[in-house]
Structure formats: C-alpha cells, structure tokens
Length: 88
Image 1 (tube, rainbow, N blue to C red):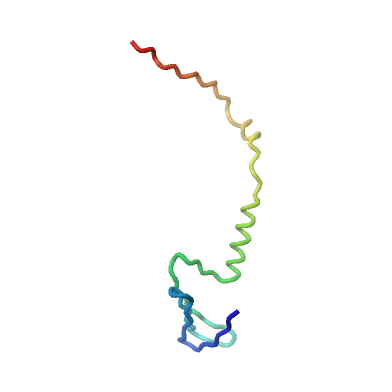
Image 2 (cartoon, rainbow, N blue to C red; image 1 turned 90 degrees about the vertical axis):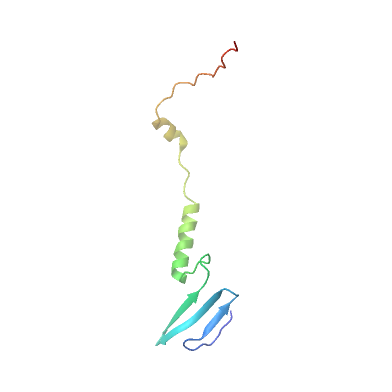
C-alpha cells in the first residue's frame, strides 16, 4: 500500500485520467474529491462490499423447475406439417 501525506487542495494522480483532491480535513474525517472517466466505477468500501455480496447471491440462485412450469401451461395442439403446394 502506498501511503501519502497531503494537505487541503493538494492532489494525487492515478494514471493519466484519475485525480484525487483533498478538499477538507476536520477532526477524524477527510473529505476528498475524485475526478475520473465515467466508465470507471467509484464506490465507498461498504457500498462496494454490498454490491459484491448481491452479485454473489444472484450467481447462486436456484434454477426454476421447468417441469412444474410446463404443467401450468395450456395444452397446445400438435403443429401440422407444412406442405408446399404442388407446382402447376
């Protein structure tokens, strides 16, 4: 882990497209601003963990029982075979 010391209004650059600015320091809180391209997701750690947990839960959902679904559907009459008309 890289540890840096910054004062208010000082920035940290990450690559060419991400900038982190220290906006305020009050007691035990630091307020930061992050400038990054829209295609880069930025989340607080606790939100990121919730997203990951939801993704894991969604990945292990049970598959529906298609047999019981089929029983609920109405019966269909068998399809008639298509016959090409005889050329004249």
